[in-house]
Image 1 (cartoon, rainbow, N blue to C red):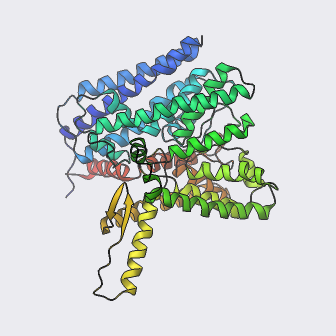
Image 2 (cartoon, helix red, strand yellow):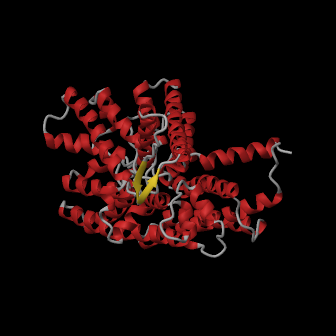
Image 3 (cartoon, rainbow, N blue to C red):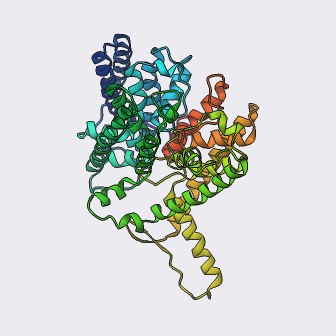
Length: 500
């Protein structure tokens, strides 16, 4: 028998959701102040409206649903799922008011793309957007990369007794520090430290390339936030191609790789345990995966004869590959070039890279390297059990911060999430083909959306069907949260309708 949610469940969910929404409202103050400082009055008013709507909504939820009860596991998952949907709607308000999106659905698409650190975009006339709105596009990637719940935990320490349950619901199940609040603060420490260093490096490079200092450092900050949080938005419509700088591209490659690394690994490296980089199963599998997908892509491009020199192959081939593998989505080619110049073998290499992703507890999406490593270890263990005598004891272990003996539940969990991603990739591809797009291009765009990457072969456009936009929004949402909290929300809705 399914039990229908009661008033206590609704109050717990509403109260914690309200606190997260208030945290989101506070983040809008930054683009509001930036707009005022730049003399952008109308953009500042757009954010003032967004702040007011979010504050009112959050305060009403907190007042109506006030409770001192702790969250259950299911309630924590539901809060996270709803928080990302609420952030999408509320975060889209100032975007839509800017006039750079043709509909609120388009603005919500970009808001979800930003928070989910995807990078697919429907914005119009990006090159003439205000500083405030352009900053907000990238800042929501910074928020989404760390996690909306991480923002809430940082801003609202008191009363967040269900912290770990929401932290896990946001597709992070590894504590870096003994306390979740300390964990969230360390994640912000890493991010802000790299933000300062990355912005400086990109800003100086921009100045040396002839950009005005103000623009150079603004672009540097935006590009860093999108690169480290593996998002893919850029201040200009040409993405990284706009800068025409190999140095700029090399810096972004380093930042993308840093963003694709587990925050727990960052912590151990910061504490002086640099050997962990080479011993960790995730970095080992990532190196192998990048090598294999790069070979596939390079062979495809060689057969296509598109890039005759090694430098061109690096800047056009390897860059797209590493951008896809880290889940970033920066491009140094135009979307149409994927279709018109690359062959299907090269596209397959990038699709595989996007589908696999980076490390767990990082800013990337997709299947992730730890799950791939565990799956391979489980396969090796089963092969050994078949080959060795029946009485032989077979134990498989792997190193992830510490040496861990492989258990069936770990392999089952890794395979389950992997299967969910594969189904999600296929679902989006089928929807794309339903609307008349070719299979390879549909699979490419679907994988990019579901794996929170942002590379596009041209399907993502204002003119695409609204149903396809909604499909990609769902894929970005489910892929970013890694399904479990989405499944719990679906079960909650079913229980509310059919429960007794």
